[in-house]
Image (tube, rainbow over all chains, first blue to last red; front, side, top):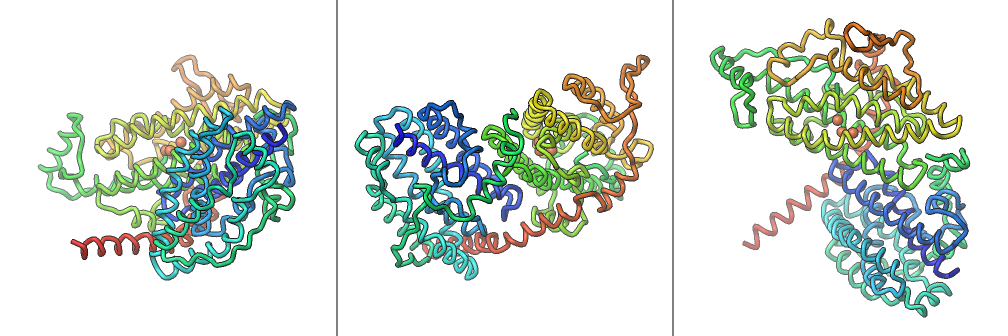
Length: 250
Length: 325
Ligand SMILES: [Fe+2]
Ligand SMILES: [Fe+2]
Ligand SMILES: [Fe+2]
């Protein structure tokens, strides 16, 4: 049960942290169509958060709710990968991150549709529809911005170079992953690495961007051992009402 | 209201054509983009629809201010959905205005350099979570008051945009009311936030309908053209009459000591907003005017490289397609 809880937190926290970062774009995107698309992505991700964290809370069995998990845990209890918590910086980094994550989510959720846990399979099926749509859009945007102008190409390359060392954590493996695999609940993330590599290489090359050579990867998010400094600030904002007015119902 | 101070443009067209145009409007016909229309009608509409579109866009900012601090996942999702709707409203309205011969980029430029306005209400700050309730309840509520009749406005694309917008606005209004309900049922601190939000938003909400009819000299032409369907005071009265019982239901006090039910004419007597404050706000001296416009300017400037790149990419793609044919 501990491993299932851990696994569900990773699912939920990835969605929550990326959803929150995406929601920071509200009203200030480069064009009205992007405002709408970003709000829509954030909305999907917050919806997914409710599913995964709701189930996590149930599995934990301590009477906590999805909201308790989202709003009353501190940094070291979060299980999202580091790439999703770093600041948006500019629209280029925001969309590049979205693409690197979507390219993982599609094969990952596809595999989870065959989970031995019925709810994991159901939630994955529902999230997969959204992930497919997100991937189409983020890949298309990366290609457009990679090829657009000299400035946009430079910015997209910088975004990729910055994010690249964080992408490897998508494929982390520990006791939890192994326990999930043994129970038929999930596959090992490493098993979809080829799919991800192929998709990412293909799109980056269509976008006239150079895939960084380094294979170095920062870890610490999905284990919770060592997050970036950015997560605490994000939580300070996100959790302020629940922290300031304990027990209030909103 | 989202177009509070739109002056009707004078018109120098041929009297016979004008009479025929007026006859179509009087007969309840819709004017479509390709139809002949007086220059004044076109210009007044551009200003009104543009001002409404800008209001939807700038209106995202005070609510965006709380999306990252929404207290629960449900509230965060609801607020995101609402702000997404508002951006969609902006899009429909810019499209409607474009049928009159002015592009979205031109209108944006006019917003940024101050030639076009947006509703005064969005120049007020949102300070606590209760403001998300008050904005939905009062601001979207006032928007509905104004926009429901505009579904019958004479300009076809505007009327059709309003039909889509109105459906969503009533949803926003209910959502805001529910936030207020939760607050007044909550702790003493939450109740205090709710009352404080009402105190700050009541008069600015009343201002949304524009100046008093006696000071609003520009309405009659717009009313004849059915660009404006009711006078400012009519709509304001309707808003007060519908909102006071809702405030009572919430157990909140409208910040107007002279508010009384008038048995004789079956409506509330209420205190007019401070019109000096209103004119200050629309001339740039509201609490947030400078910040709101600079936020829009920054978004526009920061996004320039993205828009340029998207255009350049689209052009390259089109050129490649052409070369391949
Ligand atoms: Fe709206
Ligand atoms: Fe509106
Ligand atoms: Fe609205």
